[in-house]
Length: 118
Image 1: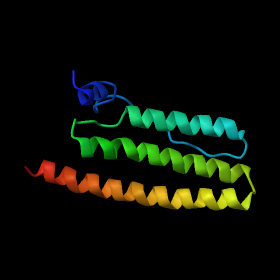
Image 2: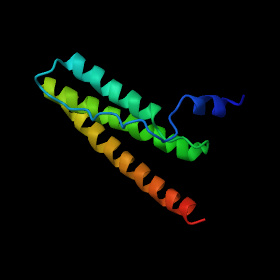
Image 3: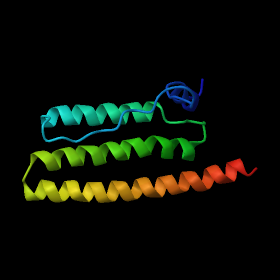
């Protein structure tokens, strides 16, 4: 079996699975619990990514929840640190990763429209 086909077998292909619950950042939770939550949401999102076997599509659908995980982790650290260097790093991660998510969503929308108009 080809590597791509093997990888595709491990991912959700649309259907009845519920979307992952959103990450909720709260200063009432310990930092380690927030990181665990962010990882769980990211993992669920990646496992439910609608894979179709086309490399560029699958890359984008997998990277969106991965990048969102980075945003969620950065939000978590902002709640639990006053270190200016880490806060700057986290704010940069949020801005950069969100921008890349927007680029990927736009790419996916453009290419989904092309596929739907065939």
